[in-house]
Each structure stands twice: as C-alpha cells, then as structure tokens.
Image (cartoon, rainbow, N blue to C red; front, side):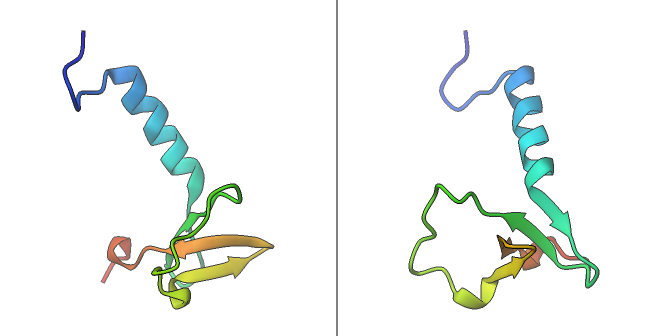
Length: 67
C-alpha cells in the first residue's frame, strides 16, 4: 500500500509517457507543452506564453530550454 504522495512504478511510467506525448521542441528550440482543449487556461497566465501552431495551443516552457 502506498503512503500519501507516493506513486508506484506503473503510475510514474504512465505519467512520463503522457508528459512526453504533450511536449514538443520547435525549430527555435522552444519547449512547448500542448494544452488540453477541455481545460481552461488560468486568466493570470501571460498570453505571450501561449503559442498557436497547427491549430493547437501550446504553453511555452522557457525554463526547460537550453541556454
């Protein structure tokens, strides 16, 4: 049995696969996380962080970029 905040190996692997399927690095080496259409973006999210490409919305995750 797991304690609070613990994840087993299968859950960790499933999360990693989901994360990888939602992340893309574009030609400018910008790391993008695909936003789910069914979820609302918090209004406090800076609009310059939202990128539209191929009719999909992405969140630019600058701290994952290589310097």
